[in-house]
Image (cartoon, rainbow, N blue to C red; front, side, top):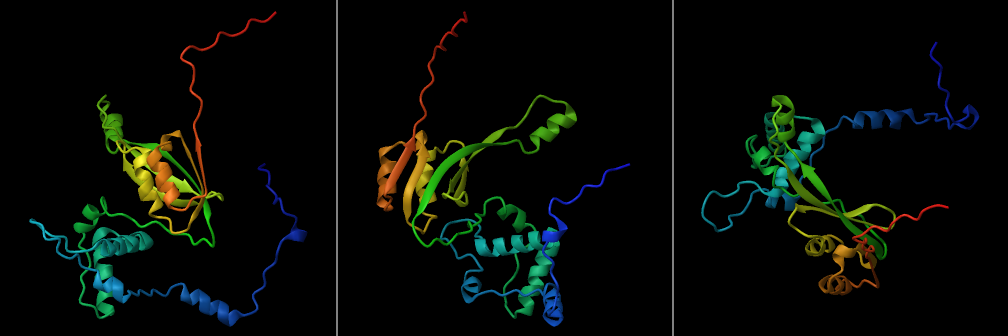
Amino acid sequence: MATRKSSRVNRKYKTKYRIRNWREYERGLRGRGDVTIWLSEEAIAVWTQPNNGLRGGQRRYSNLAILTALTLRVLFRLPLRQTEGFLDSLLSLMGLSLKAPDHTTLPRRDQTVEVPPLTRVYDGPICLIVDSTGLKILGSGEWNVHKYKTSRKRQDWRNLHIGVDDEGFIVVARLTASSRDDASTLPDLLDQIEAPIRRFAADGAYDRRSIYDRVGAAGTEDVVIVIPPRRSAVSPRPTEGP
């Protein structure tokens, strides 16, 4: 007989919610099914990509239009063709003469478009801790090796640079190629921060004069670079017991 797992919270101390404003509660439930799409005048003005003056084919849609279509696709779990038709219908309902990105453009631009990070508002200076890690990318190579029992495997690496505050929230992030070192990526990370930095902490990879100058120019009061001790090439011999 299966045992019944009881709650850790005593029933005496559980919070009981009682709905008293039924009219507002039902209005809120109906509002969950309301689909409201609103584009600002600035977004409408930059919907199409301007000509860059170079030879060859020009991009028809801006990054904002691609991000809008991809966001709607993820939000409503739509295929590519349905995403194109859904966004076209919304633009026509708004009375705009704009066109949605077609289903062949979305997967191609999805590989190169940059998603803007979510910014957090701070009232004062923050403490920034920066580090990076390597990501191994196998793609379809691992699947082919497992299916066809081959030894050939396509492998690639990316570097993920992350900056967190003293509360552990991600403030800045950037994905670069494996050939890009940590110190050269720091200026791109600092450009994403609008709040002043009170203290900057990193490891020995950022121990460069240019990093000190760049962080000092941002008004940082304290810079902490943690350099781990080097391991000896020859391991010490263990001491023998009595």
